[in-house]
Image 1 (cartoon, rainbow, N blue to C red):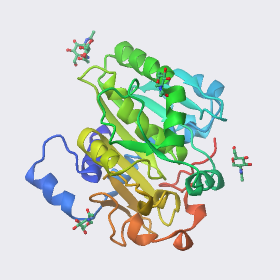
Image 2: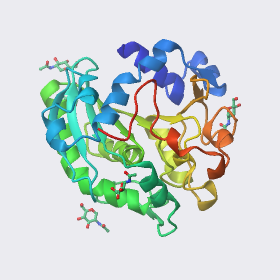
Image 3: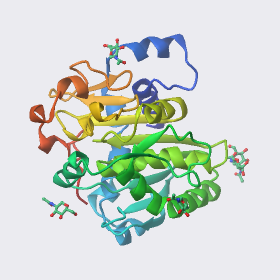
Length: 300
Ligand SMILES: *[C@@H]1O[C@H](CO)[C@@H](O)[C@H](O)[C@H]1NC(C)=O
Ligand SMILES: *[C@@H]1O[C@H](CO)[C@@H](O)[C@H](O)[C@H]1NC(C)=O
Ligand SMILES: *[C@@H]1O[C@H](CO)[C@@H](O)[C@H](O)[C@H]1NC(C)=O
Ligand SMILES: *[C@@H]1O[C@H](CO)[C@@H](O)[C@H](O)[C@H]1NC(C)=O
Ligand SMILES: *[C@@H]1O[C@H](CO)[C@@H](O)[C@H](O)[C@H]1NC(C)=O
């Protein structure tokens, strides 16, 4: 299972540890994931779904089907209020040998209202929380404010997980707004963790979060796969014309149900989201919550 997950992620993100000739040639073509590669995402999809559950339920891992999807998970901490701080939880998964960080998203109408509200701006990351990152790297201020609220508590729990379980792997997941928070946490965490730590990011229905310098920073430093379902409008917002860009690592679920790995940033092929969903009128809001290989996100 773990092997397949890594293979799928390496293909999807084009960020395999060493750039072998095989990896390079795969990176240039749109490739359809195998059935086992698709199913290797399933644990992470359940983790992203469980983030919608009340922190009291994720702390005891008693949230029902979304928790049962990863029955051996060992929670460490949870928090958030579902209002100005999305729910989150951190724990360790023995089967995957990784510390999991998960952030709650929001419902489709709410995220679209947030994304199409022009009352936001791109701003640099807080230099105390993100030491050493150029001020040219700019992100959506609403997402940045939200990530800052949980950052200290999340970091503390991740440090606990890494030392308690003697692992170097952290996997950050989220859907919708939770995907934006997951990506920002994936930039934040390595700046404060030992250099032997590997942070992997798996998100669903992720909006654009930052400018070109942000997307380039992510591609140079992280291992990101962002899964987009069919004609979901959220991944095409905020628009590129406003200066926003996605990092590489898109996996686009076709109407046929095939999962295709799309190379590059904002790939304009009609097999990928930007080409398939040229504007909001060609989108279908009901695709935002999935299902992602049978798992519907957006509620506990
Ligand atoms: C979506 O979330 C917002 C904010 O939490 C809430 O006010 C609204 O009622 C929700 N809408 C639906 C359809 O659940
Ligand atoms: C940056 O984050 C630190 C630590 O949370 C906080 O004390 C400071 O006020 C923040 N700076 C700005 C400009 O928001
Ligand atoms: C922790 O893992 C490292 C690397 O795999 C290993 O060398 C070390 O012996 C382990 N420590 C403990 C206490 O298990
Ligand atoms: C990773 O590095 C930290 C800090 O140097 C060290 O304490 C920890 O044991 C290392 N973990 C493993 C699994 O080797
Ligand atoms: C999109 O994918 C095609 C493969 O079909 C590739 O040739 C092209 O370079 C990619 N576009 C971008 C912007 O990366």
